[in-house]
Amino acid sequence: MTSEPPRSALKRERVRDHLMELVESRAPGDAIPSERALCDRLGVSRPTLRSAVDELVTNGLLVREHGRGMFVARAKITQELAPDRDAHRLPRAAGVWASQVLEFTTVRAGARVGRRLHVSPAAEVRYIARLRLVDGEPMAIEYLHVPAALVPGLAAADMESGDFYDVLRERYGVRVHEAVQSIEPTVTNEEEARLIGVPVLSPALLFERLTRDDTGCPVEYVHSVYRGDRYRIVSRLALGDAAAAAASDSPARDGHHPGIPPGDFAARGGRPALMVGDVQPAG
Image (tube, rainbow, N blue to C red):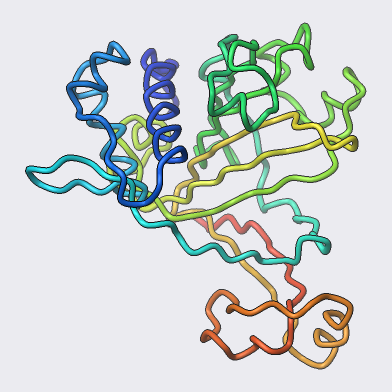
């Protein structure tokens, strides 16, 4: 059911991080270097680079224009499911969850990950790629970055048994406090499809999460790919008088709520939300 750890995972991760750094450091419509220039700079083959570029094009971060090159795409519209100061607790998703470590190593943070974790680009981070399974079936691939200085002695086995946040608390005295997580649609590339057992270019969900401890310091940066045929997010929104009362202490915020026509609640402020991960039965 599972296979050997992908040998090219770190190379793909390095290429992806470099491309994301280019996207985040430029304005929409700005050009990025040519494929040839990027291959020379990163020391990778054209197919490896093109695979990473294809992923960012599919995810709406880059735009290819025939004969002109590649450009940063227009910014995506962002919708928060809960107000900044009214974060909600996520119930545990259904099923029995387990992990299989695909790769466990120490690397330099680099500019993009270093910026998120508030460490120097030259600082060492633990890089862990792991397959998440539910009731024995592959459900997702997670790529974690944790400051190495925070977790001396951390081993691959620690990432396969139990809860990583329990390890942080019980062994290292680190208490996670809050996380900011984004979710957006994507499709699986060839390696992801092979690992989670779906066809190439299958619908999937891309999660990115930055977790902080109770002092406000970043302790974990993660991006994950969840299979779209077995995993969904369910949001419960309070829309009645009780919700209006709950939102009365918060400043009104223009915009719209997921699945609700823009403007319907623009004058009423935010709405409490509960988000639940839901594993769908196979079949």
